[in-house]
Each structure stands twice: as structure tokens, then as C-alpha cells.
Image (tube, rainbow, N blue to C red):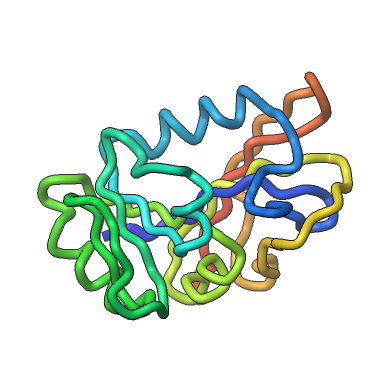
Length: 164
């Protein structure tokens, strides 16, 4: 199983404000949809609630500390990242080897030690926000970068875990 994180991050590490993205980047949304389609997506409760409904054509896994958290049939709930990823391991045969961590900030941070690679859309602008992407640069190196300039400068970057 490959554990990948996928996020868009501003220059000041902001990834969200009040449960929403602080920018409008259609190309990034398209990248997210194409990358995660027909895959397992793991997210925190707040991220799940901000979506409004389960993401279609994906196996949705939600992490929450709330007991008896109610979700529609076909969405799976766990109390910690370790239990969620253990469950995902048993589902890769049907959903593919790559499991995507899709947020929010706390889940990204908890999953970082278990993550193999990161797909980070690096936005070359600062934004106000209340959720941030964790520091990862000490443990990952850039493997690929695709720069874009409209509507604001950004780059699709792939980071892989450094070999010891």
C-alpha cells in the first residue's frame, strides 16, 4: 500500500479557512478529482463535513474522535489514523494500492510519518486561514514540479520520502 497525501498549500502553509479553500483554482480541483478517482480517500471529520456528502467514485474513510458519528452507508469511520490505514490495507485489492490522505491539517500531520509521497499544489501567494499543512521538508524531497501561472502562480509538486 502506498500512502499519499494530496493538498493545495499557500506560501504561508495555509490550506483552509472556515472549512473552505481560500482560493479558486479549477486546475487544482481537476488534478484532485483525476488523481483520487476510483481510490480510497481518508479525511478528518471536519473535511468530510465541509464536502457535504461522500466523494463519488471513491471509498470514503473518515477519522473522528466522536463516538457514534453517523455517516451514510458505504462511508467508514475510525477513531485514529492507524486503524483507518489498517482498514485501507484490506481494501487495496478493490480500490488500488494508493491511498490518499485528503485533509485536514490535523490528519495530514498525524499521517505524515506513515506517508510515502505528497502531491502538493504550491500556491505562490499568502492567504489568511485557520488550517495549515505540516512541515515536511526535512523528510521529503521534490521528485516532480509542473509550474503554472494562471490565475495565480502555482506548481503541482510531487515529494517522495527521503531514503535513509
